[in-house]
Length: 200
Image (cartoon, rainbow, N blue to C red; front, side):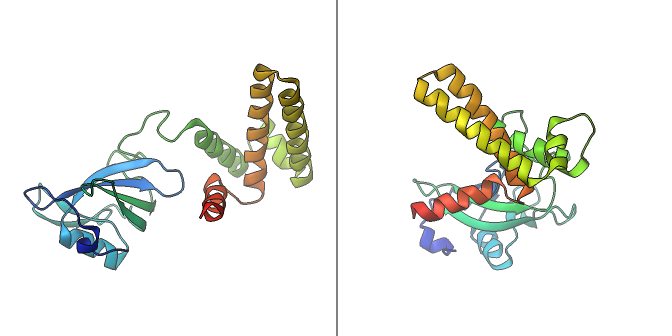
């Protein structure tokens, strides 16, 4: 990670800079805090997000009392060098209310990621009467077969030029691919990392 000076940050009069905290896997914005140079350097050296508390007038490690620490993956400065984006892995809920994010809304992570969490929960709990449970019970061959079927149906609708049917079948394809991903122990973040590596 770059040093505070290497980032050439534009600080406020009190030496603070806002730090937006984002989950590295879900891309969900978790919270906003403030860092000064000492907080930034402590964050880099410890690997745990450390803020400057304006109310307490001291450094504080996020999770020092709750245990829900934020482990740094990377830190980026914005285009104006006056805000930090800190990508993290969180040990637990970030907000003091016990929620994942201080900005929790139904669409805060995008519906595909919400659906991924539902699929993961179905796999963990295997509740009776759910189609997703039925797929997991049948195993990887059945799930992979369904992905193949939905892919073919999606291609057929694309070739036919039927946009409405294409959207319907592509939705089926994405759902079944999420199920196969979970069966294979993979996540959307894994796919994103692969695509990012190819892009570079």
